[in-house]
Amino acid sequence: MTRADPPSRERIVAGAADLIARRGLSAASIRETARHANAPLGSTYHYFPEGKAQLATEAVQYAAASVERHMRAAMDAGPAAGLAAYLKRWRDIVVGSGFRTGCPVLAVAVEEPPEDEFPPALRAAAAAFDRWERLFAESLEAHGADPEEARDLATLAVAAVEGTVAMCRAKQTAEPLDRVARRLEALVAAAVAH
Image (cartoon, rainbow, N blue to C red; front, side, top):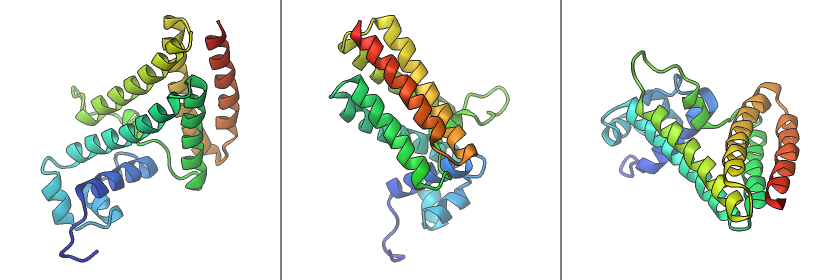
């Protein structure tokens, strides 16, 4: 890329999502994001005039949409296939990064927000979790699960996988994710068998 060829807005957003996934929201300043995305600082401020809050929100939305697209495609084959794809995606990300990358949505969700404020990035994280849960619950229901059980199991699956990704990073092993995968797969099989 030359100076005459500015980085795309999407590449900066993707870089911000990756940086947040690796280092957390606090470490993802505009300057660090520009450096991480190999973008001029001026371009980053041009694309994100509202600063870090805007960039973090769009990074969460970008990451959430990527996960959702992947899940939605796999859910066409049923909730077991969707769960397997969700688990595999996170296993590939965590292991493939040498246990350095987690979920940017979770990273934003665990940051302490400013007092008396509910930042847009945190709202975007809540919306992402809601969409992932709803997508999984709808697939469970469509395959015969009781609606209340489907919603409960969807929340359990998203929470378990998100939490386990953090455990894998801390322990430097995929073993927690593999154990959770076995339990969740059994629960999904039981829910759709009824």
